[in-house]
Image 1 (tube, rainbow, N blue to C red):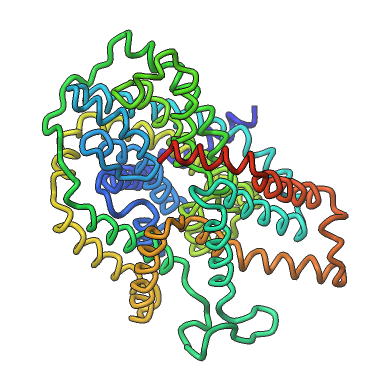
Image 2: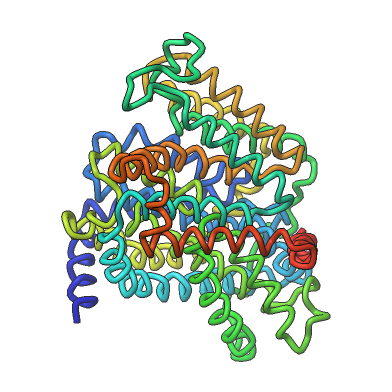
Length: 501
C-alpha cells in the first residue's frame, strides 16, 4: 500500500542522526515548556523561529512540531502536582489528577497521562498518514474561490468553537483581520494603515503579535497568581498501573483519542477543545460520574489522550491545505515560509521526504516522550518548584532577543510589549486571543484569494456560489452561524463552556 511506502520514506528521513537529535531537543524543550506555566508552545516556537534560518527545513519543522505536542505531555505534570496547568489543554486534567496526587496516587496519574498520550499520538500519526493523501488530492483541485470559502469556513468555525462569548470571538476575529491588512497593498503598492510609520509599511510580523499576546500576556497573568502555586508532591512513587487501572482507562483512552482526532482538525479546535469535550463525554457515559473531580483515573486518561490526539490532528489541515487550525499551526506555516516552502497540497508532491519525515517524527517523538517523562519525573518536580519570579525575567529576555533578531530593530520589541499589554487586557475581558491570531494569519491570504477569484471572473461575485465546492463550504459556514445564533443552541453552548470552567 502507498501509505506504508510513504511511512517508510518518512521513517528513513526522520531516523537520520541529525533529525533524531532535533526531534529529541524539540520534545524535551516542549516538555519543559509544558511543565513551566507562563510560556507555552506559541511563544517558544515564535522565539525559536529566527534560529531555524540556518537549519534544514525538515530538521527545523521536526523540532518545532516536537515542541508543540511535547508541551501537551509536560502540561499534565504541573496540572497533577501543582494544580496549575502548564498548558490550557491540561486545565481539565487538574480536576482529577490533582485529587489523585492528594490521595498519594500522583505516580498513577502521571503514568496514565503519559501512556494515554502515547497511545493517542501513535493512532493519530497513522490517521495523518491515511487521510492526508486523499485530502491533498481534493485540495489540488481548489481554485481561488474554493480557498477563499475554505478560509471563511475556518474563521466561522473558530468563532463557533471559541471559548466564551460569541460576540467576543467575533470581535477578536475582526480585530485580527484589521491587523492583517496593515502594510503595503500587493496590487497597488500603496501603504495601508501605516500612519507614516516606516516600520509598518511591511506589515506587522506575526511573531511579534504571537509573542506579545501569548508570551508576555501569559507572563503578566501568571505573576498575578503566583501565590497560588503550592507543590503537593515532592517525591513521586508508584508509577506502575495495576490490571484494574488498565481496565479502567482502556475505554476512556480510546474514546478520547477518537474525539481528539476529529476535533483537532477543526479550526479553533485542537488540543484544548478536545480535552474538555473528552472529559464531558466520559463524565456522561461513566457509571461512576459522581467520582469525577474527586480522583477518578478516567478523568485523567480521557482528556490527556484527547489533547495529544487533537494537537497532532491539527497538523492535517496545515500540512495538506496550508490552513492553520490554531496559532501554533500558524507559526508552523510561518516557519515553512521562512524556509522558502509554500504551504499547501503541493508540499506532499514536491517535497515528499519533508512531508512524510514530519509525520514519522511524530511517532518517534512520542516514544522519546514516554522515555523522558516517566524516568525524569524528579527533574520536572524540581523545575516546578522554582519560584516564578525567578523564571520570568529570563523568559522576557529570550522573548526580547527573539523579536529583536527578526529585523534588528527595537521597534518590534516595543510593539511586542504593546501586544503583551493587549494580551493581558484580553484575558481580563474574557476575550480568547486565538481567534484574533487566526484572523491575523488568514486575513491577507483571504484578501489575495478574493481578489484573484474576482479578477478571473471579471468582477462577478457569483463565482463563489457557482463553483460547487466553494458554495458548499459557504453554505456550511452560514449554517453554522445561523444555528449557533438560535436561542436554544446558544444556551447549550454557554452551558457547556460554563461546565468546562
